[in-house]
Amino acid sequence: MANHKSAIKRHRQSLERAARNRSHRTRIKNVIKDARAAIEGNDKALAEKALSTAASVLGKATTKGAIHWKTASRKISRLAQAVNALEKK
Image 1 (cartoon, rainbow, N blue to C red):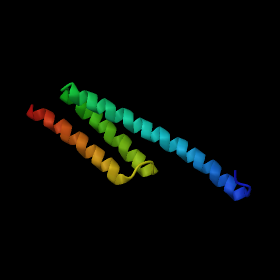
Image 2: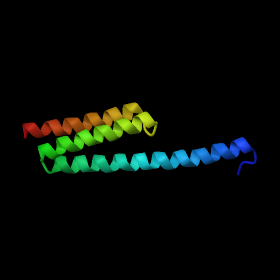
Image 3: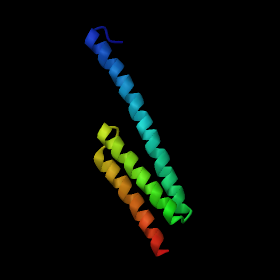
Image 4: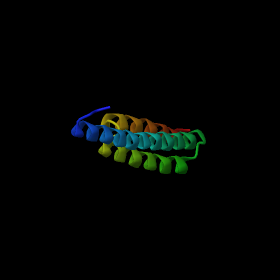
């Protein structure tokens, strides 16, 4: 454990940020799982709504610094491709 006052504060901050980022990443996993379930169920309306929610959550996590913006963009793109493929079926 750190002995300097500033190092103690930095450690405390790192723990708080790690917990915050963990909650963001858990939320991301859950909304992606919901979107994938809607896609698997071939429910176009539900899949579009889930995609919208997932894009919002991913965007917010990106602005908070929990994930990289290119990671969020890739995940949104892949979900959108899957949703758009439902029309062709």
